[in-house]
Length: 342
Image (tube, rainbow, N blue to C red; front, top):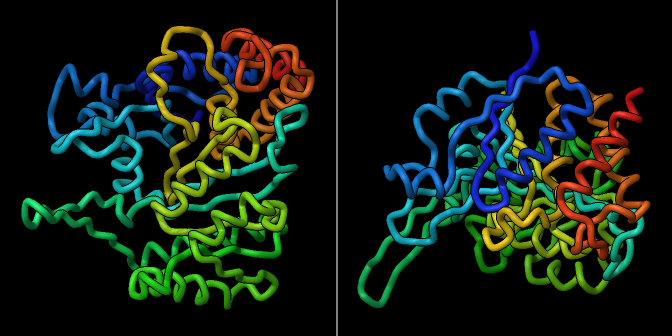
């Protein structure tokens, strides 16, 4: 039986980017069945309710082998539902948010070549969204850190390092200030490390590594950077600048029994319908999903085809120094994907 993937087209540039992903998947000849469904701010503004995800979409997700999520908008108003990504991560315990950070050929290298992986705990921290207004002057937010989630994401990080033949997991924290929460996280990292004797643990405070990523990012090449939810959310955005464009950063949210794939960037509503934005992150997130669903050859072909298009530089979007439209870059990737699989 073919595998199924629930697909959320999202908001802003999401629908046109997901259509681009579909075009490349078609060129790859995938056997995965894509089932499109609603979610996001656009749907919520029309229907309301306490979730950005309708019940019908949850039903599709429950019966799919994986999820693909285009960029979605999260309303920034008090009382609005939590984001689509956070909701799905928490329901399906997708504890590892993974973003490879690797320089592509023939692209801007602001600080030189980089090649490492960011792993972010995806289900808790400040993203539990529990805030309390104590007085007119005071509001607090709860940062929830558990041994269970910290241990799971730590083991994932070491397994990722092992898969990639990396020698180090870089544990990022602020335990000199957040002694209980970051302290617990570090305990679980070091506990996991005992099962991986060939892999070192480097500890960095969040403020120090933010500086080091600008000062000398190459010291983190061939390493896994690991942190709690908000810290790595911020750092992985910083890391995207090292490869020249967040339009190149693809992402996966992985649990024990389910996974969600997505581009790392937002919905960029001001660019919606302009056929302008970079499709690479969206396409490669889809390619990664094919590998997860048992089609490694098709996945690899899409990665090679995308790298070829970027290397040639003829059909690349404005953020990569070119003037190609989204559709033109997509067509080139689809063409080369088909050629790779002949």
